[in-house]
Structure formats: C-alpha cells, structure tokens
Length: 186
Image: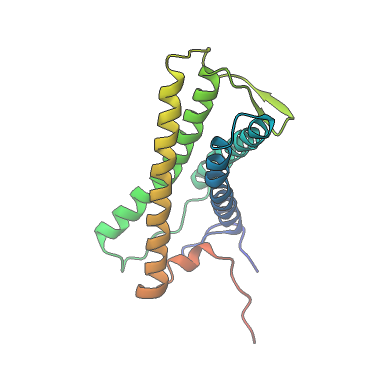
C-alpha cells in the first residue's frame, strides 16, 4: 500500500502526486506556449494564450503547494553512497526546479500585467495585475519569461539525464523513490 508521507527510502504518495502533476503540466505547458505564441493574431491565438496562462497559474499554485508540503514532510535523504558533490548537485538541481518555474510564471504574469493582457484562470476567476500597464518594460518581462522557460527546458533535460543515469548506469534506487510502491507478490 502506498505511504501517505515520505519515509527514509521513498517519497510518499502526496509528494509523488505533486511531482508528477507538475512534471506533466510543464511538459504540456512549454509546447502549448510555443504553439500559442506562433499563431497569427486571431481569436484562436487569444484562446490558446488564455489556456497557457491558466495552466501557468495552475503550475505556480502546485509548485508553491509542493514547497509547503516539502516543509511539512521532509524529503528522504539521498543515499550516503552518493559522492558529496553529487548530493550537492542534486540539491541545487531540485531547488532550481522550484525556483525557475516560479520565476518563469511570475515573469509571464508581470509581462501580461505590463502589456495589459488580462489573466484569468480558465475563465472562472479574473486574476489581478501584478503591476500597472507599462509598455516600456513589458518586452523585458516577455524576454525574461522566454529566457527562464529556455533555462527550465535545459534543467529538465539535465534532471531526466541524471534520472536515466541512476536507472541505467548506476542501477541504484534513487529514481525509484519517486515511483509509487508496487505490491509485492507472495
């Protein structure tokens, strides 16, 4: 049976669910944003950008919830068999995987606010602007948003690569800690 909370050897089902939901949404969000941004100016483009903004707000909320949950239920320690520098790199990568998505979402929200492009959550809730309209700085926030998304894509490649290394080369249990426990056959 799946554990609710983290243990010394694995993440609990809540941490796993938050991890995999955020991962899935980010893998939808990046191509969705690219697609919407490259459509010609039209109602369809506005609709796709609205989906992109709504998904961004959802990811922002889930990442913040994940940070709160991490504070409540500390993650399992990395194995002592990992080299010190690898443990430091893993910790740095994980914090960047929290910081960069939050920063990218906030930069996108700041861009929308400065450009006076309304933000709502799936047409249900109008989200207030973070700053007043300012067409001078709006392009800066847009470029910052794009740069952060590019950095996030690189971090994800690195994270997936490190996971593959643990699964296929090191053959340790580090990656399995984020997978739901399987029932053992008798």
